[in-house]
Length: 243
Image 1 (cartoon, rainbow, N blue to C red):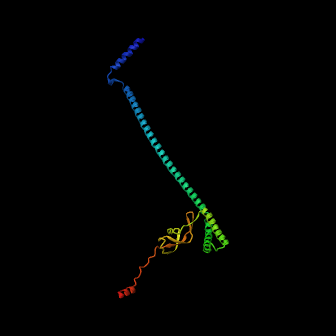
Image 2 (image 1 turned 90 degrees about the horizontal axis):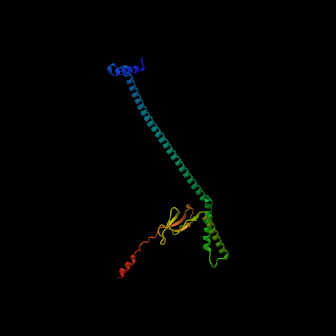
Image 3 (image 1 turned 180 degrees about the vertical axis):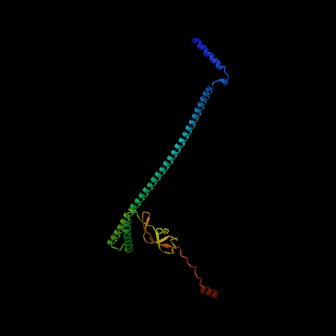
């Protein structure tokens, strides 16, 4: 058979098959088409599932990263606050140590100065006793020179102690201050107002802002209340009789 005849036979065969009714079509062909469609649907479902799972994994990974970042941020903040507190405490300790060192340096000579206060008292007592005996015209010049020398030494000593922070407490004529003054007794005074210092018995001293010894003083009670004059009843009776 020639090739042309073979082609004609194949065409006719195809035409015959196309004219066959559906129930005469080969079942194997239907199975093949159905299987292909099932595979496509399965692939589509698989892709959708994979995409969903991938999105879920991305979301879960994102949440984990956020949780880790938040935890690290909190730890960083806590550590930062702890370091700041430590630095602040260290600075406060440094300041306290500096203040304490300055205070110790400021009052390092306190014991020595306290020991010299009785010497100042002795100089003051000597000066007062000399002042009571000095008479300008009759006192020998040697005695006057000695008195001036004692006053000069007292002033020099007081000036040196002032350089180191010792100052006398002002008392006479001013208001009584219980923080600086010690009242020996109180008395009436027509010149000094009530509550003010009349006289200083013993000088007080303070070292910088610390009282070493209060000044002993006499405090005024104010003006004395004088009783009204009594009437002389005898004189009144005599005047009445004479009248």
